[in-house]
Structure formats: C-alpha cells, structure tokens
Image (cartoon, rainbow, N blue to C red):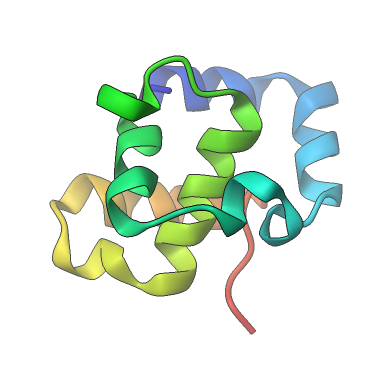
Length: 93
C-alpha cells in the first residue's frame, strides 16, 4: 500500500473509525511479521504485493513498535509519525 493509499484510507471516515478501535497488535498479520516482511508489506514490494489493509497497517504498527524505522530511510519515520498522529496506529506503552 503506497503513501497515497494510506492518505486515501485516512480520508475514509468509516474505515478510519474501524481501525482506531482495533488493536492491530492482536492480529495474525502482526504476529507473523519479521522486519523484512513488515517493510515489504508497508511498501508493497515482493511478498507485500497485494497485502490487505489489515496486513499493511499491522506492518506499520510493527515498524513503530520495534523501532526499526530509526534504521531505515526517512520515509518510514515520517509515515510512522503521521499514522500515530492521525490515530491509525498506537504508540507502544
């Protein structure tokens, strides 16, 4: 899912409300992630092509929780910050 797709997701209030109420950390998609698979799903390359919205947002939650965004290109950190600010993913407690 591209950045444009994430922006589109934010604009759809019905879906936005569903995601803000759901804990992505409890999904199967989150539990099976590795750093590589999370990046693939977040950017939509290789194994991440055709990922569902749950898989993509779970990947972003994983990237935020593990802090791997700090060692990746700036796009990851900016996107994590934006998704947290918009309430789509949560900060780690």
